[in-house]
Image (cartoon, rainbow, N blue to C red; front, top):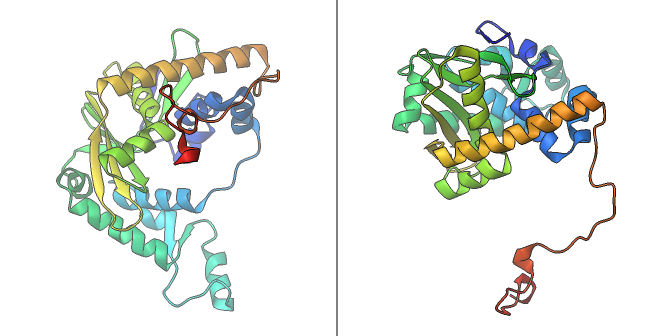
Length: 278
């Protein structure tokens, strides 16, 4: 059933069987990747993921940072008796060391210095964080879902918060491609529209660097990005539907195939040497 579930917890959302954007990413790699993500044992978190989670809790309106993460007291070492006791007491939270805490503070500071991003922190944008949306794809009958970081109360705008190494236009463009954020933009717009009957006007990224000098960039996904994102998303969803129907989740090509070097390493058509001669 198509629905907007404002009170659903993050754990309940991730435990729901509907297809998410991260499921699409796994499916893009192979059927085995999708099956392992969906039905395999949970994977351990990473330091980068934990910092991103803590940052979201600190930056998004309505989120409770103290329920998600805690800062390691300055001077307290993990290897000491006191340090181990502190870690055990807060084992259910993300533990931020001094370096993480410094980065987190500078990232929030960077957002406050950016006109658009500051509006999110200050509550100028009237909306809600971490709302869950569910719908049914009409072509495959598959249940689909999304959980935007922030959406305006009137449903007109989705804001997504990203941590990144490089928030410049060219730098973040690489992240958009490598992490398939273009697919996320299209998927979220489509799922919200299916769930509510109203399509948001735009999908906006707030990209904040997690390394010095901690710059912030804000970018609106354009129509070309949305169109290609939708194409790739539904290619992945169709594959998931076929694998689920057949019970066969393929890996890579079962036959031997040729492999070559990347094009940028090979001689160009005009005879100019490739990268190995430069």
